[in-house]
Every structure is written in C-alpha cells, then in structure tokens.
Length: 197
Ligand code: GTP
Ligand code: MG
Image 1 (cartoon, rainbow, N blue to C red):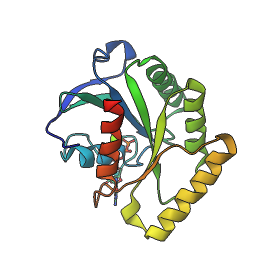
Image 2: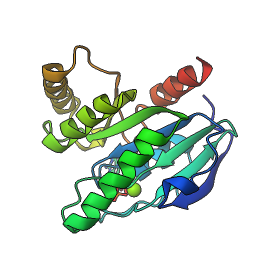
Image 3: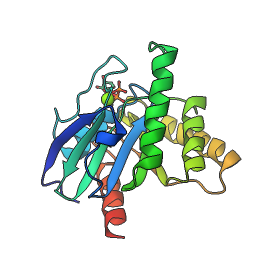
C-alpha cells in the first residue's frame, strides 16, 4: 500500500465522541513506551503525526488518523505505566475496554510488544482479554533495531510458546523497527488485504 495521505482527525477521552464508524479501523495498542506512536509515524511516513516521547505515558487519548481517505488508524494510550495511580489505571482499563468492545468498525487490534524483552505477563493478559472480546488481532514486535536478529528471533519464539499455552494457533506476527523501517511493507500489505476482504 502506498500512503498518499495521513491526516489527524481528532483526540478523545470519550467513546461516545469518536468519529462516525464510517471507515475500517485499526487500533495500535501496547505497553507504555513500546513504540506505538513511533510505529505510526514510520508507517505513515510522517514524523510528527503522532506525538512520541522518551517518557512513558505520552499518549493519553484515543487519537484518530485518516489514511488515504480510506481507513482509520488509532493511537491508543499505553497500558502498564507504573507511575499512574491505580484509579487512573482502572479508568484506562474501563475506557479501552469500552472502546474495544463497542467500536463496530474495528477490523483488527495491532498489539505491540517490545522485541527486546522475554514474554511479559501484562502483554499476555491483554491478549487474553482480546480473546474474551472475540476481537481479531496481530502481534507487532517493535524496536528490532536495538538488538541482533538472533535475539529478536529468540524472543519471538518464546512469545509464540507462551501463546500456544492458551491459543490453538499463533496469530500473525510482524517484526518491526521505527528506526530502520523494517516490517513497514508487511504491515501495510496486511492492512490492505484486510481492507480488500
Ligand atoms: P506512550 O504513548 O507513552 O504509551 O508510548 P509509545 O508506545 O507511543 O512510544 P513512543 O513511540 O513514544 O516511543 C517511546 C520511545 O521509544 C521513544 O524514545 C522512541 O524514540 C523510542 N522508539 C520507538 N520505536 C523505536 C524503534 O523502533 N527503535 C528505536 N531504537 N527506538 C524506538
Ligand atoms: Mg504514544
């Protein structure tokens, strides 16, 4: 897929105020600081489109972007940010669950996982909750430029092993880097194929 346009649409804290579900939608979600906003900028080729930061907890709203006037890309706040209070973590959970369970045009949840880490409980738990909601998802490993290909492959394999403890099949997996743009074509092709189907 060629990205011809990528425009910011709106930021929201309320599911009731989201843009009309008129286009197929893909939501990017994962732990705080995993690289969601960076990946969105890499995919769209627009550096400042989604705000990035070295400090976790940068994205606090549901941000909608419209791509090629044809589909919505959504940047969500990260989960598992230790420095937010318990109440705001609960608020996050409720808000995201509401978004995930109510958004009728949501085609696929893109779950971002840090490729440098061995499987983390919080990611596996989140993935299980997607299963409970019956939502299609794929796993997108981020920051693959930060270590050797071998190390990335090892962590991907460990993650697959963990998934196979609860899932019969492993979902589609993508290895990406916002830095060297690896995985870009594969992810865009995937989105294109879902949009065509
Ligand atoms: P929150 O909005 O806080 O949940 O974070 P986020 O998941 O949107 O992460 P963000 O894109 O802001 O990136 C966090 C940090 O990781 C920034 O310092 C990025 O520059 C860095 N980063 C993100 N992706 C990559 C990558 O692929 N490679 C490298 N080397 N650094 C990355
Ligand atoms: Mg962000």
